[in-house]
Amino acid sequence: MDGDRLPVGRRVAYWRGRRSLSQQVFADRLGKSKSWVDKVERGVRALDRVSVLQEVATVLRIDAAVLLGRDIEPAGLVERDAGAERIRAALSRYEVPLGRAAGGRQVLPAGQVARQVTHAWITFQHARYPRVAELLPELLADVERAHAGDPAAARVPLVEAYRIAASLLVKLGAPELAWLAADRAVTAATGDRALVAAAAVQLGEVLRASAQFRAAKSTVLAAAYRIAPPVVEFGLPPELSLCGTLLVQAALAAAGDGDVTAVADLLAEAAAMAARVGDGHDHHHTGFGPTAVELARVTAAAEGGDSADAVARHEKTTARDGWRWLPAEHRAAHLLDTARAYLQAGDPVGAGRVLLEADRIAPAEVRHRPAGRDVLARVARDPTAPTMLVHLAVTLGIG
Image (tube, rainbow, N blue to C red; front, top):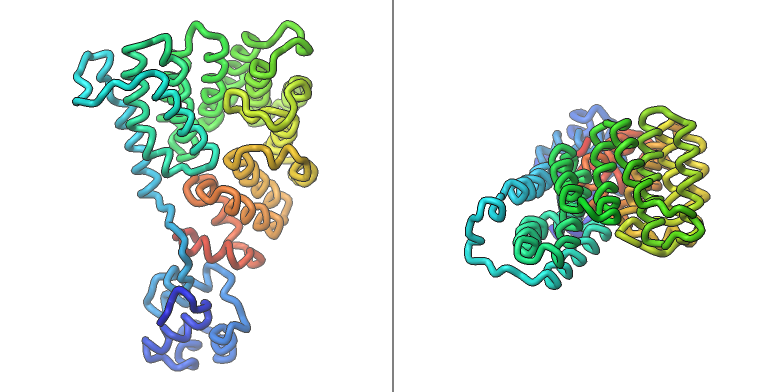
């Protein structure tokens, strides 16, 4: 059997034959009619529910993924946890402060490690999370050694590497370990207002992921107002991007804390800065601009339980040119938030549509993130879920 090319119904017929089951016996074991089995095998009726696929696979004594035969790379919990553990091990090394030998590794020039950090940022923004998890352990070792040899030149790469680690660990569902990376970023940045503000972006993400909303709001606002220009109109785009991103973080923290007034005020302030920056820029890897602020309004509305407003804002904002200019990671993460809003609004079809779009833009956002897998499971359980999502859920072992 050329299994990779057969449709699902033909696979069912193939494995039913392998198990020496007639259509009637097979139907009886499933609690279905013989006609139902015949239609499935001829492709007239789709197997488009996780529960039914699993029942069929159980009767046929095979894994449900075998029925799908899709070339989908599993993104299991083991792989994700292994990535987090490798980063944990890297953060647990104290070679430089303890004066330990570098194990024969060459201490790289600051310029070289800076280029490696830039590559890691690009990889992260393309949502290639498993690859970032592979890169980070050696990258962290390299930047720490480079910083020990040339603190001034390697300070920025060191802070940036810790920022990447913190953001990735939040994605992987390890907020406590992410806090360690964010804390190191802030510590390494101390004394430089712009670097502290950049590191505070990830610190805000970590605190929100840990549901420490008030601490998140207080921390990021302190960093925002330290870098805020005296007059917005005279602010430079890089500092406005940092300040505006921190205001967005504060607004989302306020949304998590149920402070609707603060959400509106902070996002209005961020919008004024975004208007000066414009879309299509990525100062300090923030993706900040008018579209990013509007997407934050969607997330805040969903967080506040106003799913109808969240959905309406989403559909309007994603029609803007600025939407296409945002990094894949940013867009796919937003689509996960929007899928939850559609579910809250009682629209699983809409949730499935945006989740498929998220998987198209950045598969790892759906397949590797615990948050993505959770939304996928919720959508796939609905009888109206798109068949492609049901198949993806079964392949990933999500039911």
